[in-house]
Amino acid sequence: MSEAATLTRKADFPGLLTADGQPWHYLDTAASAQKPQAVIDAMSRALGKDYATVHRGVYSRSAQMTLGYESARRRVAEFMGARSENEIVFVRGATEAINLVASSWGMANIGEGDRIVLSTLEHHSNIVPWQMVAERTGAQIDVCPLTEDHRIDLGALEALLTPRTRLVSLAHVSNVLGSVLDAREAADLAHSVGAKILLDGCQAAPRMALDMAALDCDFYAFSGHKTYGPTGIGVLWAREDILDAMPPWQGGGAMIDRVTFEKTTYAPPPQRFEAGTPMITEAIALHAAIDYVDALGPDRLFAHESALAKQLRDELRSMNSVTLFGPEVSAGIVSFALQGVHPHDLGTILDEENVAIRAGHHCAQPLMHHLGVPATARASFGLYSDESDIAALLRGIERTQRIFG
Ligand code: PMP
Image (cartoon, rainbow, N blue to C red; front, side, top):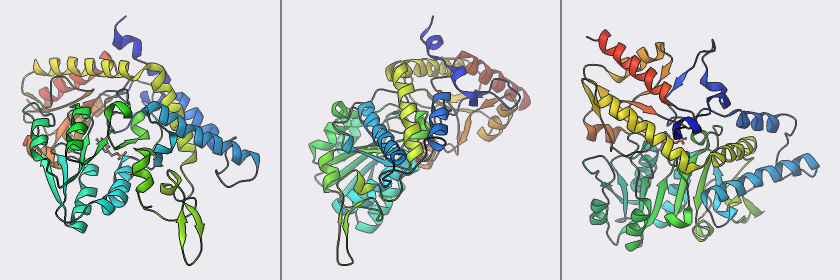
């Protein structure tokens, strides 16, 4: 049996059927993953018969929920190869994780004349928070260019770094092109000038094994909903000594040590960064999602999806009038354009064929500018994708080409 056949688990995912029970060829996993039944069940139990709030109640149900919430934190720590669960901050998503780092660490450590390095292929959520820091502090943003085959150019990164570089913030895997960063090499380069490195792991966390010690980065962010878990929860990992030194960003309940009108002292991390009632049910469902992904083996997920990406690239290359973007070897994400057809029109016709792709700028407008297109069509795979999804996509593309002559 092929690797693809052994991994595909469509039956575990109720979302992969249309309303009338037909197969739905979901090729938009990079935007958000479908959920396995185990995650839906965990969420439903947590919202139903197990439900109570955490950290406050003196009654046993609340104590149970607190154990569940904190056990999710330990599970995430283990999944990421963190040294301690105290390095895991639950946030609403990757966007919030990056904004937290920008507002707290960034505003405390970046000043006028300092430099922040981003790359051409970043998602807006790894651009805009840093522009806001730069505007407030007088720091400058340097943009690391891409190689010809659309990977972050580490040679160019090295040349951009200066003693004033405080932070390098890069996508571990591009959400548009599937390009995989040599994260360890980027971390070593950043550290060589005393800068910190943040990795936006939104597209890597659901696709490859994570090991914070081996990556040697300083901050790592990902979203639960792209990792087969629910929306409304994400993870910020940061080294404990860095978190310890970071000022709080949102104030409120649960993040304090003691409050008087004269002075408030704060809880240690991670609680210092989790003001208010947390995402209890979401954390418990994320735990179930991580169990599901881990049981399959993140390395096998990567092999499965990148084999599908390679197959799709080969098929598209053999068609007329298709432009392919991104490197030949990539994670399971393929961006392309059909000559004379707007990606939105392609997406609409594919929808009639029960094929879902993403068409647009993918929250990466600077990258679109670099590629010289307003938008791309993007097919992205998940652990449940298989060759039938590629075949349906290709049939839909051929039909679109016939319609547009
Ligand atoms: N970074 C990357 C690379 C992404 O793909 C996304 C989501 N498209 C984000 C950040 C933002 O994630 P979220 O919207 O879940 O906060």
